[in-house]
Length: 281
Length: 295
Image 1: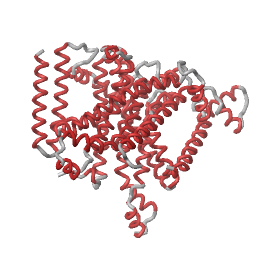
Image 2 (image 1 turned 135 degrees about the vertical axis):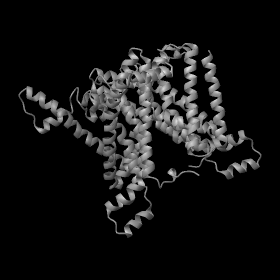
Image 3 (image 1 turned 45 degrees about the vertical axis):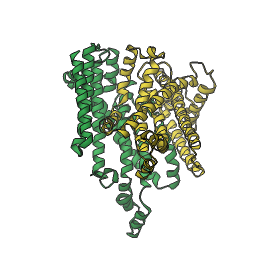
């Protein structure tokens, strides 16, 4: 029972510290402290509660058990990560984003198609495209190719819609300026319109990171070689090896967050001029 | 609105044409193979008609899917296990329950974040991180948890519905949270000062200024949230051994090699998504009228 009390005391202390920080502190590094403290407090409470109430491992393993499982199975987790995230999600993401950008530039040349594509694309982007997973598995087999195809289908429309919307974002005034410089279509595209579309495109790219990871994992539920995160999760749930499931969730969460963070970092570099990226004083 | 009809139809037409071409391309190998076994050769015209009438095509033609969809919706009794309306209803139930839970969660977190700086600093980053976690990785887990804890029985509901609802709520609370934080903060300082000069209490300025001002943001985020909730319900059906619902229907159809059924379920899901978004739009117009917004 003492573990639980310790966790509760830690929670209250962390809360107090956060209130104090929220009142006075300013600055970027300090802003990182409250969420980290909050996360630690949640973990402490979880650990304390599991121990105090003797929750069986098949219901909810303690964080320490999960981390021990991660530590003991690094090789296995790495293999699953490579299969699902690197081969499935990354390759599908790259192809989907590339195709969407090319199609966006092509469609952009016709005002008729642009106006028609936005509502249709927005609607398709809202559909449960993840449902194509079984179809892709029958088309491309159990390997990573089918996972990449699912990811392709999932990321294509959100990126396309954002890119098409972004290409119309350049100011009338800026376009006229390019005309007075006698800039041709391609120069205008690369020097003005693509850069000003970047905030929109990155919005789509960031949405697509999460979708890519989801798509790659779900596709594995429909058939996969004997490795991969989706495969491991479904078999581990079947044999009630819950620490393994949580270890996979940990890896999935970590890779999802890092993937998102990586794209957000590139965004910061590319669209440093945009108001949303300015550092607040 | 009218200016969009023609372009939308053109885009849809292009998609259908591309689809027909892909149908021929994808199914040609099978037709050629069959003909080769019979010692025949197929001409182009015959190839085109044959690829569009297969019983188990790699890619069914649009009209085949439409026929299967129509049969699933109108050709069966609504209570039949073969009716897509029945399975759609099962999925819709979980979607709406998760959507409602997501709204409650999103709005209450947003109110907390707007009024307490501590919550903004601690909860907001985790809300963002929570969306980068692939929920499907959690789906089988949530199912096991709600089954072992018999959460559903405690609430007088089916266990499967509970797990799907949780997944839907997890996906749909985030857009609501982000939209409501923006919306509740949308009144400017001048308006807040005006209320202060009228000696309005905090509660009154919430009820008469912040809440009404947030409505456009609220409904915009609802449209995203309802689509996310439907995705959640379908994803929740996939890995959980569900036997009912559109996601389960897709899974079963894929395992038993019935591509037409699979595509019909997929389009039924799309239909449900469209109806839900229209429904939210109607709700928004009703709310606008009730609040006296001029169209």
